Amino acid sequence: MTVERVAIVTGAGRGIGAAVADELAGRGYRLAVLSPSGAPGAVRAHGAVGIAGSVTNPADLAAVVDAALGRFGRIDAVVNSTGHPARGRLLELTDADWLAGLNLLLLNVVRMARLVTPVFLNQGRGSIVNVSTFSAFEPSAAFPVSSTLRAALGSFAKLYADEYAPHGIRMNNVLPGFVESYPVDAETVRRIPMGRPGTLGEIARTVAFLAGDDAGYITGQNVRVDGGLTRSV
Picture (cartoon, helix red, strand yellow):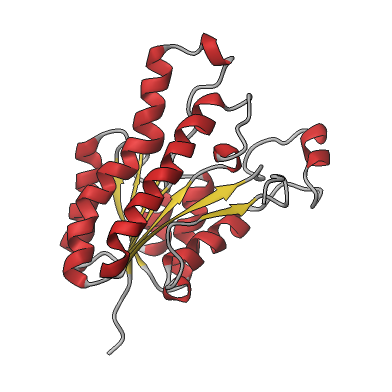
């Protein structure tokens, strides 16, 4: 008997999160989605369970996990996708900016992992994919909060992956470069070896690959999908 796969996608109302929801639904996943809007597009198009809320609110994270289990009885994959934190010059950012970024970019993943790991342990398998950024390991002055805190996310993902790999549970990060959903100026495009921003579909297909069984031997990794933008090896 084929087991129906179930995924939670946060930030599924638009952009990368919405593209990931579409891609996973196309691969046969049943969905529970979280976004401030409740992701009505995914609800209408894919019969997803939609929760209106924020990844910065622990109660909303718990609600989408409960909704997935209540409707489908299992969770096979989680995709943590979020919005963008405050931007500004490094020392002009306030404590409030940094704390908001911590909730948006790191604690959301930690809290979700606390919620779903017992489910994964009971099932003997599970996968978490976090949508990060190319600047996590080559910090950009244009994105100070994101660069700093998503570097911390890389460390958390590795620690989690090491601890839970023996139980068939994986965690990986996808590091997009500049993507078509936001304006990209000509100077930035010239820095990208492929000469263009990435498409939402390219990011979504990478996320779906890492979430699924074809990536069953990949864990604790930071996969750059940036058109060759970053230079380190």
